[in-house]
Amino acid sequence: DAGVIQSPRHEVTEMGQEVTLRCKPISGHDYLFWYRQTMMRGLELLIYFNNNVPIDDSGMPEDRFSAKMPNASFSTLKIQPSEPRDSAVYFCASSPDRNYGYTFGSGTRLTVV
Amino acid sequence: RKEVEQDPGPFNVPEGATVAFNCTYSNSASQSFFWYRQDCRKEPKLLMSVYSSGNEDGRFTAQLNRASQYISLLIRDSKLSDSATYLCVVNNPNTDKLIFGTGTRLQVFP
Image (cartoon, rainbow over all chains, first blue to last red; front, side, top):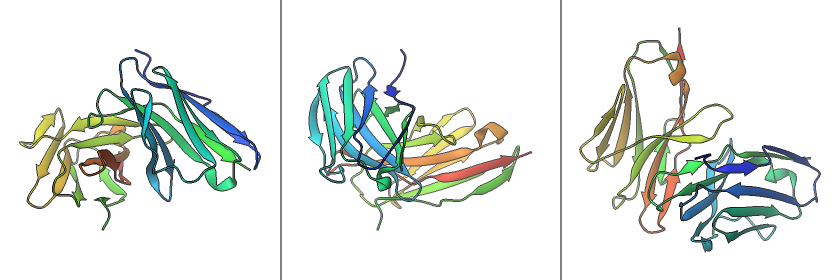
C-alpha cells in the first residue's frame, strides 16, 4: 500500500489566493482526518470524515476553510482567501476506526506571503 | 488544564542511555492511548499503542497508570536514530477524537 498520499508537498501563494490541498487515504480506511501543525499550537484537528460524510468540523478556524470528500479515495481542503496566518503544515490522516492509530500523509507545507 | 500534557524537553542523552517520558491526561474515561514519533519536517508515525498491562516492543516500553492518569515511554539503549519528537495521544471519549500532545523532543548524542 502506498500509504496516505497528499499533494502538493509544498505550496507558496500570495495572500488572497485560493489554495486547495489534496489527499488520498489508504484504501479501506473509513475515517479521514485533516490536521494543521504549527510550532505554537502543535497538531490541531480541523475536520474528520466517516464514510465520506463530515462528522465534526468544529476545528475549522473560520469560513475561509472548507473540506470535501466526494468519494472514498479523495478529499480536499480549500482555503479561500488565504492569509499569512494560515501558513502551517497540513496533514491528512486515515484510519480504519476513529480510535485506532492513524496513518499520516507526508503533509503539505503551506506558506502564504 | 490541557487534555494532554507533555514536557517539551529537549531531553539530551548519550548513546546507550535509558530515557523515560511521561504524559498526563485529564479525562479519566479515556480508553485509547498511543505514542507517536515525529522526525523533523516529517509526518507523525505510530510508534506503539499503550495497553493497560503495559507493553514492550524491542527497546521501547509503554506503561499506563490509570490512577494517576499518565502514560510513559521508556527507551533503553538509546540510539542516535531515536532522536525525534515523541507525541503522546489519548482519546477523548466525549468528543470521540484522538488528542495529540505537543510532544517531547529527544536528542541522542554520540
